[in-house]
Image 1: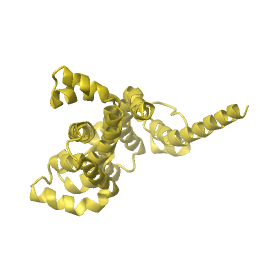
Image 2 (image 1 turned 90 degrees about the vertical axis):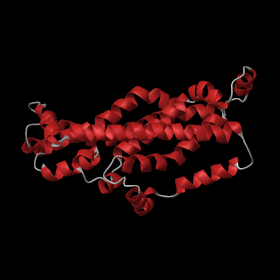
Image 3 (image 1 turned 90 degrees about the horizontal axis):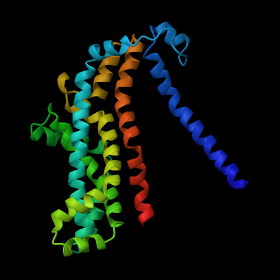
Image 4 (image 1 turned 60 degrees about the vertical axis):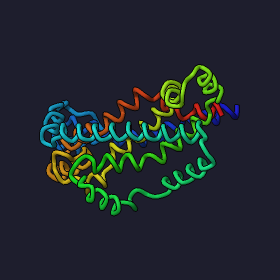
Length: 276
C-alpha cells in the first residue's frame, strides 16, 4: 500500500513538473497561429478563433530563419560529430589500451576541463580566434564548441567503455585484429547508446549557444538561429504572432531529434550502470 502511494505521489509530481514545462510552450504554440496581438493578450493560453499558419511563412522570410536555421544545424551537427570522433578515440586509448601509467593522470587532467566555466574563457578564446583569422567565419564557433564539449564527452564515453568486458578484445586479438580495427569494428558499435546520448547533449548545447555566436559573428549571413531570433525580436517586437512562430522554429528540431532518439538516450544513460 505504501509503495502504491509513493508511486502515485511520484506520478503527481512528474505531471505537475510536466505542466509547468509545457505551459510556456503551449503559450508560444497557440500564439504562433493567432491573428493579432489583441487575441494573444485577451486569451493567451486559449485556442485561436482562426488558425493563421501564414505567420510561419512570414516569419521564415522576415526573420531570415532559413539562413539562421541552416547555419545552426550545420554548426551544431559538425561540432558534435567531430567532438564524438576525437573523444571516442581518446576514451578508447584511456580505458582499453592502458598504454602506460600516465592514463589515470591524463583522465584527471581532462576532468579539470569540466570544472572551468566556458564564459570565463571568452576573452582567451576570442584572442585565439583573432590570431587564427577565424572571426566572422564558422570556424570561430566550430573550434570552441568542439573543444568545450570534449571533456564531458570523454567522461561519459570512458565510463561506458570501462563497463565493456575485456574478453571481447581478447577474442578480436586472437582473430588478428589490431587496435584501429578493434576500435572501429567492435568498440564503436557497442558504444552506440552512449554516443547517441553525448551527441544529443552536445547538439543541444551547440544549438542553443548564444554568447560566442553573438560576439564572434557579425556578418548576418553567418549568424545562428538564437542570435538571429534576438534581432528578429528587436525588429518585430510588435508582432508577437510572428515572434512566436520564430521561437517554434528554434524548438521543433530539438524536439524531433529527441523524439526519434529517446530510446537510445535512455539506454545510453542506464547501460553503464546496469553492466557495472
